[in-house]
Amino acid sequence: MNSTSTLPRPLRGVVPPLVTPLLENDQLDEAAHARQIERVIGGGVAAVFALGTTGEAPSLSLELRRQVIAATCRCVRGRVPVLVGITDTCPAHSLALARAAADAGAQAVVLSVPYYFPPDQVELETLARRVARESPLPVFLYNIPQFTRVAYEVPTVQRLAEEPRIIGIKDSSGNMDYFCGLTAVGRSRPDWTVLMGPEEMLAAGIAAGGHGGVHGGALIWPHLLVELCAAALAGDTARVGALQPRVELLGRIYRVSSHSAAVFKAVKCALGLLGVCHERMAAPLLPLSAVERDQIRAILTECGLLGGDGKTGQ
Image (cartoon, rainbow, N blue to C red):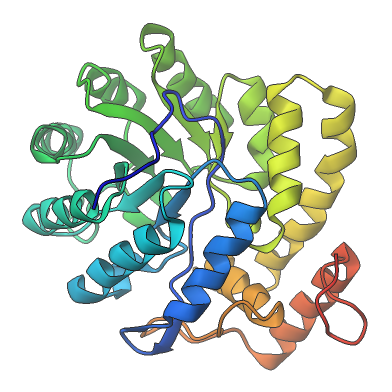
């Protein structure tokens, strides 16, 4: 499939990490998938990211991941760039997914640290270079040590930036000192993209030299995150100051549960309440409890996204 979208370098703006709506285990709800894509493209996002953490990629079969890739590119129809997560415990599977992404019309792939057997930095660098050289698409790195147990250390990222087909990194560590180390890498790479993970840190990340963010909240309230990002990129501190409390209010949904998957469980719950998709999680995870769902409903109502009658607002 030929794509009509090109990938800006650096990529600036908000990139929502799509959930994977499920009818049953390992069965994609294509109608719901299309609804979330229309929701975020209508909200003005810069690109979409399929098969990330929020998309529960590690819990999905290779066949379902291929279906998600194809469905995403088919629904997007070249209107924005498509990024595809290819992280797997098996490098051959990662490269197979990269080829599937290229065949479907995606613009880039995203590689985190393989999980289960933690690699050291030499092993991680070797893997990233191999993927960059064998992938038909350019590669973003993805740092999320809270799940992978190993981070892309800044010196490793600096060396990997020598690979022209590695074009940036998304950081979900929440460590601003580390993030600033990543933005420093870009001083020698004008096309290098650095994207912030935690949405409450989006404006601070841009002020530190970042280009935007990958935020689950953009699936729920896309206009808010897009407007905040635009204000931060424009240096409009007054507008940032006005919007930041709304982002922090929405962010309360992530603290409703103490589960290790609380963030993306909350996103799927919110999307269920908004009528976008079912709350079903990929096995072995279960949806939030009824009590937790009620707490998220109350937060969405306070945000103006749900009416008191439970109907979607705004």
